[in-house]
Length: 549
Image 1 (cartoon, rainbow, N blue to C red):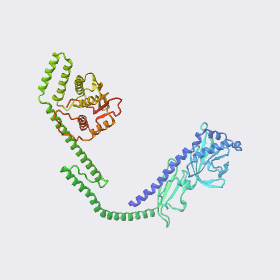
Image 2: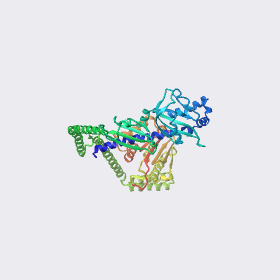
Image 3: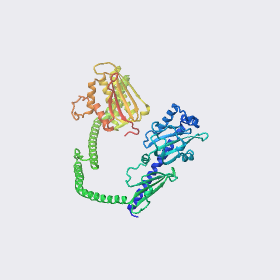
Image 4: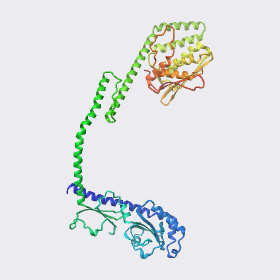
């Protein structure tokens, strides 16, 4: 058998199987729909009250409305259904279309009931038959029906029946692309024809005399007992196959021609951005980090170019960051070398002053000298970049003690820190500039007392150190100037100051830049824009544990 014949047989089988699946799904839906009266006690009560013909003469309007409401809910949004009827045992006929259906039925005009009653509660597919209960006259319908039984004693209470027209029954097949010459035949389990698109007696299965040869496929459903036969003229399938082959050849030839014409254009368009990217790479190799490749497309080459530009920008940023970091390291080293000039002479001198202060009984002077010695040893002898939080706090405390010796009662201090945070690592000499700034600016224009508080706490994965004072504070203009000085580069770096003249404005800037270089954006110094009194600065750095670097 050729491939065309195999495809034709498969197509015929698919049609039959698709129709059978659609019928099975619809059969199950109707099976559930016809059991709806069992779940409505009012409907069951009405049917129980109509078991004898004596109740036929009078039907209350309440019963008619209740049954019509149930039937309307079952038939909603089902255009293939012509009517849903409930036959009571006393001869009363309930429906939701009173204008088109009689209100009663007779046993002589309902020969179809025999198969439904024999099924004793199972749903039955009724072949096309004449329905005589329509006011317009007999109508040919295909129906699904079942007996409604009393759940307690299994007594027959009535019959629910769903009428479908031939067109309505065919609409449930779900076939949209079926060939016009295809013949569909649907039969019940007893062999009765439910639907046929062509009279079977006019058609021979196989090759008829002078007629076309049909490919036949038959499917049986164990769910509904329905048998579906699909017959497709073989010549139609072969004709379509030949047309498909010619169309495929034409499309293939056109595609090859288009591919040949477009290959040169696409190749040039593809290689041009690659050559441009390669030229930009060579410039980057020569150190021209400001160069960027142009993005001319949104394909993979464009994404690669965007990634290359991002990489170069990051490389340029890292080069400048490393340069700034190394520059500050050299400045720090130079400051350390300058501060280390003959430190032993300074220590011995301070020790001599301390001894004299103790001999004279001046304990305050002695404490100030001892604190100054601690400051010198912390800044001169220790060359590490990171220290423990407790060491930095002790350094700030020693600095405050020296200032207390100078200022007396005008200065008070308070240091609060969780003991568990004492071993956290932080950059060296970060707190002293903030404390000095609080004393210098907090006591400006007034000899009033000032209280400085240092607090250390943690917030999630960050270490927060607050330096707060109750001094004069800052105006909004001053706050803006401080923020601008942190963001803008230091234009005065490298200027030479006169001997004994102290340059101002560098301490907070240097601390901010150090933290930015060390930890990146999101960390550094910030301040409260609306403090109740004085000024409040906050240092935010990530929590780090371990030995000092």
